[in-house]
Image (cartoon, rainbow, N blue to C red; front, side, top):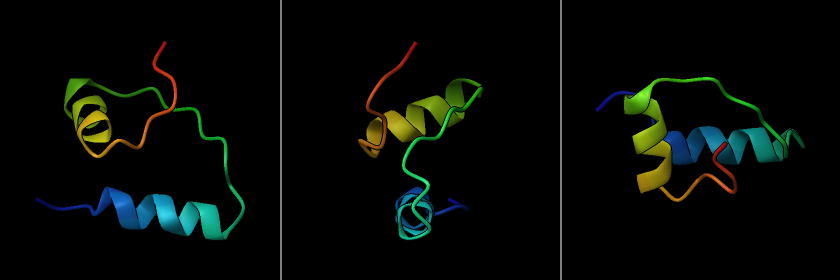
Length: 42
């Protein structure tokens, strides 16, 4: 459904952007959790 979060994470890593801080709502947070793309949730 829309954005491929894994592809985005891979592209960010390719660009050596290895630490990303996000402020997002429950839909994106849930999608990131489901894709196992979060190391830490505050």
